[in-house]
Image (cartoon, rainbow, N blue to C red; front, side):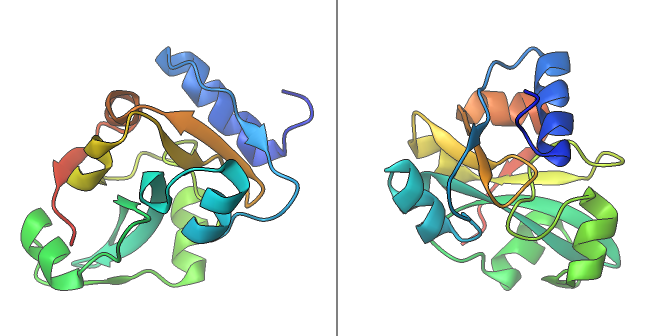
Length: 157
């Protein structure tokens, strides 16, 4: 754990506190995008759980989406009951998560974010999420992602 970046150590502690066993891996190169992460890990891009921060009716929300498609803002707004949904600017992402875009983990944030999980992630035995830094990833099951985040499962595409 000492070889992990500081933000990834926070994520590791959250995993342990939640009783979720997942080994954070440090990749030699950045995995800021789903295709980069999938290539580095050797998995299907749809098994990458992108941690995207949106602003829904003025408040940041975290949406865990499959790397296999883009989130549809209209579908997302309908799914979460919001009048407006937009991608959060980098400053809001950093403030809400304490992490940089490209490395946002589903957990380890300064305060709990309302979280939604793409129903399409359910199709994979193992899903891969960023672990607090653009060079770190962690394997999770769909159920462990729900346990960690308390996320509501919704359609996003």
